[in-house]
Image (cartoon, rainbow, N blue to C red; front, top):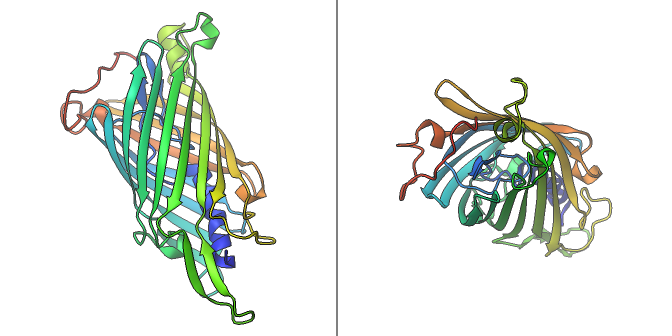
Length: 338
């Protein structure tokens, strides 16, 4: 791996931990009486009609650059169990190495990502759901100077969600967990970049196959207020959450590079405590959330960052038009949840 590729990977791995690869990651999911919020580090397990404008992330990259990402994403249901998503992110880099070798500021779009997501099973009584997805990051659709790859990459994904409203203990019933696991590979895993003038050796860039995995632990005051006991008005729309997201190269890694950041074989990730607000403002149904980004090691970031999301629920706002699946009826939604 070349030095330039190593530096690019530093930002890429940090961004992957923060935004799950900056893919189309949005949707609040309702299974029985449980609302799973649109979390930021990993996607939630459902399919819906929603618009994220924007998801914001601030990252202190290991190469001393500061990164600001503004992601937009749109999800459209094809059937009640199948959706298509599209999204991208605008990146603003400060104190970064520019193509001419100087230190300065860079701006540009990341590659466009598309995704198909399918829910093969859900159980309303036990607030349990499983889904799978396939996504593509389309090469040459973003700006290479901010880390967008010239080649496409493909990701196979699996998701689950489980609410604990079926438990007897009242204090446990607001809890829920979700999880995601991704396997990402490149359409061009090995790239010959030239000849080293000093050694005469061929220079090769490796695009590793990457395993990304994460979980969330949620405590829904929204659920508690609706189904356990009343919560003070200020808190009843909140879902405090902790996310943990990790990425690791698993193959096509290439030889170890001394002092590379991140390390050639290093696991990167973040722990992300935060809170989500789900509610309505007149006819507008939305979610607002914010989390801290706590890197697990130096390869994941130099200090704590932050992410935030604003998500509009089109299926609630336009149930008979824009928010309705293209084929089949809408899924039933319990009234009075938010």
